[in-house]
Every structure is written in structure tokens, then in C-alpha cells.
Length: 107
Length: 120
Image (cartoon, rainbow over all chains, first blue to last red; front, side, top):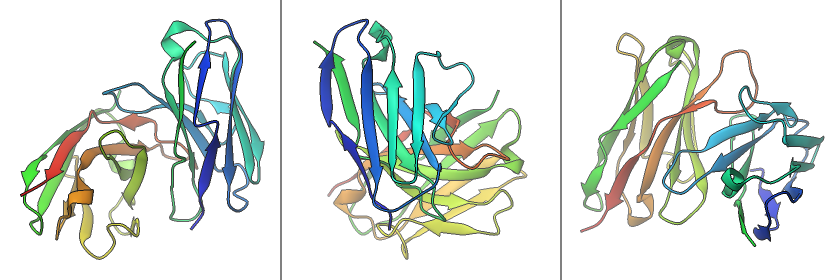
């Protein structure tokens, strides 16, 4: 089964900072990757699909890139509402595993 | 706008069975593959199972394979997950989520989750 790792596992940042989270797959998955944001007690929210496509209604400060085994999520100017945990998810055949998550908190 | 509402969670003894449900309202439930995802307290997300739009295909995570059944009733716009032989490690919030039609990745709609606690 394909495994995902995320780095860092947590980070502290300030409002206005640019933040990058990395997701690595144990084998190539083309562009079959999505990113989610989750706040405590809430369901995950889809941010990015197909590695780099912005979900409707998601602010343009969120962007995704990558293909194969290495992917990144970038938040260009962190806003107060962006402090949350972020997960990547891969979509290989009949397997939809999530990464372990990256917690972004306030410095 | 699609709305998903889970129900059926609760406290269950180890070894027993539980069925959780996900009621959908709004558009395109019957044309969408549906998934179950769970999250143990304080832990990350774990994909559990998927069912095709018409119920003809199902797949499971290794952690529940052989003791779980995902099903759907499109006439009732409802998704189900039955887990048998429950273990303490099955304790989690169970979410249903939609895979949008004609798209390869991403779950665009999620329910609010239902908490299952496996404990004696």
C-alpha cells in the first residue's frame, strides 16, 4: 500500500507569513493527490484536488504543486483563520490513504 | 448544495456490531461514489471504505476488511457502514464523504461525523 509522509509535523508561524507543507508518497501517484484543512471538532475541508486545482470557494492564497512522489501545499500569506491541521490524501487504485497531518499554530 | 448527516454512533461493547448511517440531501448523491473516513480521538484521518455510485463495487482498508460492509440505498439517499467484531481501536468519529462525479481526487462534501466508542 502507498504510504504518505508529511513534513513538518507541526510548525509555528505568524499572520502574513508564507508557509509550505510537503507530502511525499512511497511510490509515484502522478497527480492523484488532494489537500484538506481541518479545525478542531470539525470535518475536513477540501482545499486542493488533482495536486494543484483550487476547490471552488477556497481563497487563492492556497496553492498546490507537485507530481509523482513529491507534493507541496503553500499558504502565501497566513491569515488567522488558517491556523489548523492540514492533511494530504492520495488516490491510487482503490486506496485513499491520508498523510499524518501538519499542525499550523500561531507563533 | 449537498448535505450529509451521520447517525448511529454510540457506546458499544467489544465484539459487538454497529451500523452507522449517512443521510444525504440535495443533489447528486445517486451519481457519486461515497466513502467512510474515521478519526480516532486526537489522531489523524483514516480512510475506511468506498462504494461506487450504484453499489456494485466496494473496497475496504485492511484495518476493517473482512468485518465491515459498506452499502447504500439510493432510493433513500442513504449510505451505511456496518462494522462487526468491534475492537477498542475502532473508537473514532466516523465521517461520510462524497467523491464528486467526473473528478479523480478530493472529497468535496463531508458530514459532521458520528462518534463510536468501543468499550466495556
